[in-house]
Length: 139
Image (cartoon, rainbow, N blue to C red; front, side, top):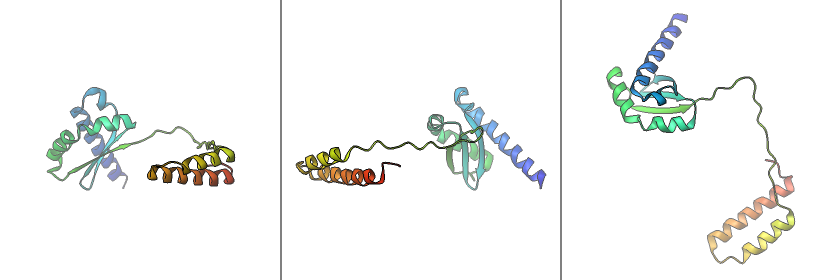
């Protein structure tokens, strides 16, 4: 069983090296992992910026990988993976809700707006702000 996983890792590393050779050097180092799952080549990168750059090479990568997979790979997915070190906690920020007097003033002013979609949007916003002010403003 362990041999199977080592074989899979080896195949993925070879595929990654193959993909990296087809990319410009500055972009190749941001291709972190790749694998083929069903008919999809999945390339993992370290940020959304590099993911968007990799998408420009979609046709090149698919055409190139088609020769290796006998045409079995037809799709490409670029995924962003984050490297976390240690335990991270999510910080909850308190929403800054206007005072009830300000919310009421906004409601009165929105009633005089003649643009119907804008007026409805402001009324929905006021209703949400009122509700959130009563709940204490937490997300």
